[in-house]
Length: 333
Image (cartoon, rainbow, N blue to C red; front, top):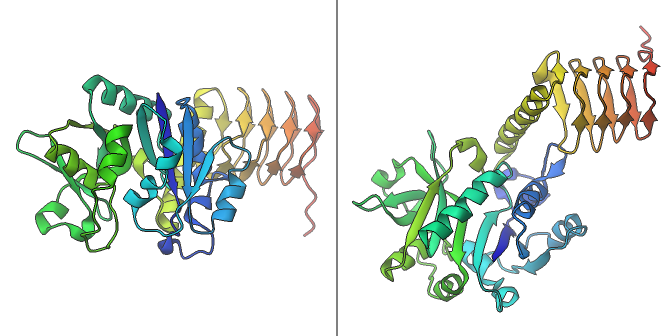
């Protein structure tokens, strides 16, 4: 059995925004929803989201999902955030997957591989790692002489030699439930931040002679954590590129791909042609053989097969019938 805990209690100070970090949008949807949808692809028996800063706003976004919400009333670190979920997993027997609500690009197949690796290795703890060219801001994976994960050290607590390590902790873990909550009670805030680190469980498992495994993500872009507006823009650039590539592989033509904005729920049929400076948003569905000229903005629109949308049209809701030609919007000069 598998339970998922999503950490979404943080304020996100570096975002410089009144909005909780996990509610900033990527391709039209909050970061947290991207993570939640990925978690749902694993068909877990339980999903628990830990909320804290402006929790009422986060709970509102989650209201249409069958997930449990747990308040972390004091933000005392990642270890404490997971510990507050214990009453909700008291009778659960299985593995607990811990995800960060601000890592929206993580792919379902990567998590499936993590679960498989964890169980095949019969590990007590399995951590998802990645090699990155610039590890600044991430916890470093410290391995022993045999190449096994020995511990994770946060950057603020790392020595110069540890800071030079490029293998980083992605914040994604899989734990055997019994060990997880037993070990969390042993964690102490003996660090620069004065917080209860979830990462300390790696060293505790090793000290107890338990197996710690690691899986390295094949694509470093998947594990991008959004901690600033710059990070958010980077994630958007990556996600938009992925969406366009997927549609092009299915037979969609983007005349100038980099100048088209798409949202996650948009669907586009084969043989359609989309010109530059077009935005397709919400639940817009573009059927086969449609042409959309430049500077159009469509939200929650169904465009039926063979239709033509002239330049400059702004459409909200409704349906464009098959084969209809919408003239370009009038521009007065």
